Image (cartoon, rainbow, N blue to C red; front, side, top):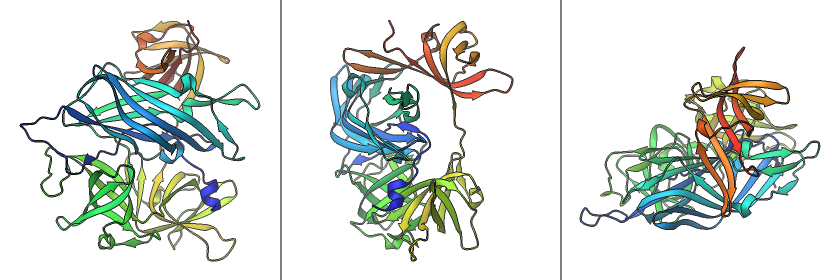
Length: 460
């Protein structure tokens, strides 16, 4: 196995299960006289980082909606996903048609969770609570409307879900920390990375084609090459859109867009949900490499990154390489020493043995976000609901914690059916609860928590 692919340093965020392949069944649609009794639900997967792990393999076997119409299965099979491949992208894990109506929970069935440690490559299968059955509850119910697509973002934060218990050679433990975001008529903010086969190329407008999913062969999306978008060949070199061919395997990176009208007459596909690609990669050679910048771009548009300790990789900036940060487009000036980045492109073996491998870069993602600190302890008095604050008793003493209207409270419990994860409110907090808080310490003030995780399992 290629050393870089074996050892590359992956994602710096969290484990997120989401739904973002906003796609429509080819040839779908309905007339006004025959309003459909079903809607479509899409589940996406995405992630954020765990520094001491090189892979987190999650095996999903089923996804089910539960509500007034009983249980509606939208996925049944065996899908293995490396969550750390998804820190910057969405990936679809389920796309299915269900009866329209109200639902109260989403149930995931996970058959295994395997960790691969970064330095030793040691593999560990974690014990799954409640035999891997996880019920996800949003605040209140959600509705699948007839003839519409509902996007469900299921965010399982890996950095918060997988932690070490005990000291020294402590064991890993899995506690699902999950957020659910129901987006009826909305779109996810995160970049999406789709793989599939070119089914058709359209003349008008230029840069438009039909991409059919590699996972769901009867599901396609209309892709538009963005005005400033770039196309790269199987070697990672820039080419024109004219090099694209029907039946070619491609990877597209960009964002979904949502139009008011459903334009189906030219493509046979519901274009209410289309895709704007900032990068198109032809062939199946596209890969991702994450590392720390060790030098700035030189006169040949090359710089080096350290991928894993002594493993150094050369990054080649191309004509058309895109630079993206958390707030949007950047330029090559964002490449600074010690900056953590992820490079999307094609890995090229060195011409001279012993020289660094090179990645012909199509896209460079710059991690310019602020990572939350973690503060754990037991809730103590005063617990002030008016000001949304409480004292947290920690091993180093009491710390005041402040929340705001955007703070998220996650409650984890178990019942006879499995693990239950739901979004709570400040009223669900109580003294003597053991909690993990995530946020930032204000200088001279309280810890400001963006998220509070309350583990109620084992508590009366």
